[in-house]
View (cartoon, rainbow, N blue to C red):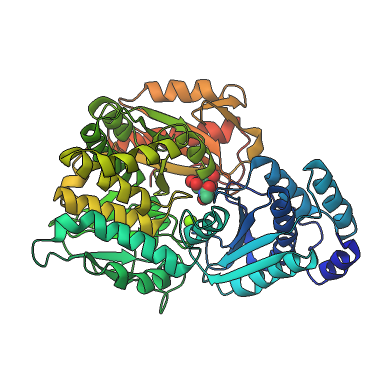
Length: 542
Ligand code: 16G
Ligand code: MG
């Protein structure tokens, strides 16, 4: 390591005095103007991680659904997964080191993680469409090159595409070709193969309206749609030509406000979907003839997909296990439906993709979705081998089901939730099953739910257990929540410190919207009183 060169370069990417940032649930995220040094240093860190794992490492410059003025960065591990937890700590140390300590921290990390400094390093870089992203990704490149790493800058990519590229490179092409073209072809041919029966009878092209959050999803979907246009026609809204990124649109807006985005033309009973700013989340929705809005979130997406997979698994009858992974935010009705009607095992993990992803890896087929629309399906190597074998050898009906599963394996992005890939899976299932969006929506009825935020002096003063469903600290808070929950029917509530904002989140559900709102308000008040609330007291009424 040429530490002198690092020191010299680092001065050009100086850390603002006193700025402390944390590698959180989804990497570093804050105002773009505070991130130059972080980007440079994440370039350095990616080189060390690459040397240690002897694999390509990804660096994605994006702040997902945050406002356009923000930015962020996350590192992608060799199999296309989120960075390992022990390296999150290294990332935080490195990002917060004062200039003069930088060389020592680099040496420390290399020693602690037993990095072989003689190894080659390779880093792949992608970025979203934010105005700040290009310059920030140049800072990543400066960090990579000063430590002698090689790199490939893909330029504009969705987050899931970058994860895909990393995995392709490290699987030596077995997962697919590490190009944007390779990604389009892999997904599109799986989609066309899967849906060929559904569309073979005449021109049954279906139209889907897509709100692209004025982000990268618009560019990529516009490039890709020609590849699958024989099966699906997508109409793009909020494509970035007029509006601001994530402003009054996108999956996060639609899910949290439970209303349609601006800038989309909806027609009664026709399905629409929204991506978030880096296209790793998707939610569907429609309005009915009375103009009432219906949201179809990650829970209902998981249910549609799981029921389809379960049918195919019954056909092939090979005892492959299917599990669904959710978080505490999953609507109680969805959990009940999955467990009681569909009879599939459901597991709950902490919020954050990496937790769900790891749990889902325990099954032959692991379906995971957060209610906010982030999710995918993972197939174990053994399941994949079995399915491929059945697709070749078994007799008719079994073979047909196995072939479908084979296409589905290719259609899902196996590295991370991917709005484009999920959209194609959903469209394929709806077409194959002949389901309308209303029929899908009618699988179960969501319990009314409400999310609120409470400001406290120190949100780390709240700690939780049982996949964030129970508070351990401060004392008395869980007891207070229990007493409040008891007052209502079908009720549930929990609180957790946010991993992305300086607030505590409150979630409540109950049998009616009125009761839910009361419960949410009362729990917020308990948090405010028992966990050191600051600023305005929570108010009743929304
Ligand atoms: C991040 C997570 C997302 C989670 C959200 C929770 C990733 C890639 N993203 O966006 O999964 O739902 O944080 O935010 O892990 P919160 O902690 O502020 O509620
Ligand atoms: Mg995102």
